[in-house]
Image (cartoon, rainbow, N blue to C red; front, side):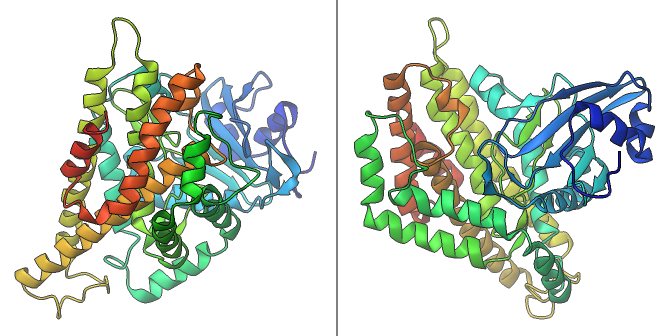
Length: 417
């Protein structure tokens, strides 16, 4: 079988592909008794776990349409190129928290990478189960600080930055998908929108009729479309992180592009806030989840505070380097540099809170929901949790600039319950 043009793989043809690809066969062995399991979530891609006599790996193949809908919704398979490129770039910057890429085939839209073996699970599932991860804030703040700082103008010169921005402009289809589902559909009547009806019918209508909310979301959409601040993951929610008690791995950056840093930070923190509001729906007799909710809030606060500290430390270490955002011979004394840094981080916090709120709202009244809420079986109980999250998200979107630190945000979350 020839693999010189795009062919969707199945378990049988994948064996042939691996045999013909030394970068893969050398990792697992080229024997015939490979164990292959398709584990894709059904939305966009094929994902295969492959286990051989001498190792294991994951194969991810992008399809030229949205898998869960079919060929009626075309989608460029070039997204695999941007995912592989970002995995490699972010992997050099944060090797402890990004799985290694072994092989990329642009024609086949296929990535071969490290298999994150059990007990790794998707972070979202761990949050639903009420599992505490003692290193989560440490690891995620480290990943975000390094990947965002080292792909920004704080580190790059403008020539290098513009070249990188130009390359990632090609990921336009996935950016447009984000524009639609995050910044547009929840605020208008759309056939794709859904919510826990009839309990949230009035809540969804209120979102569509809230003029103050529309003004804020317009500003964030503009920033998302126009601000090429750093190479962001583009879809950094709790379903894009795999964890054990001592390992944190960020996966699936197929939505990556040069965009606002706050979109990554906000997506991640916003999903932690959603997990917080979902906990009452998972509480049971003998386990009211109160302690676990406190752990989530501590994790939110620690994540931002550690990120802030590490980002500033990287800035200080590289302030005399090639970065052209703040030239060393202009920002050449401690006082002015401190003013610049404080202003930068304050704006970044507000950006992150805004994008986080937008992500929360779209997960409740938009097209794609989260398992945190969806796994609450009783509709009425689920709607109560979702309404609290939605009300907090709306407040946060409109009033984000009043918060001076993440601790104030955590206090505001506590007041909602």
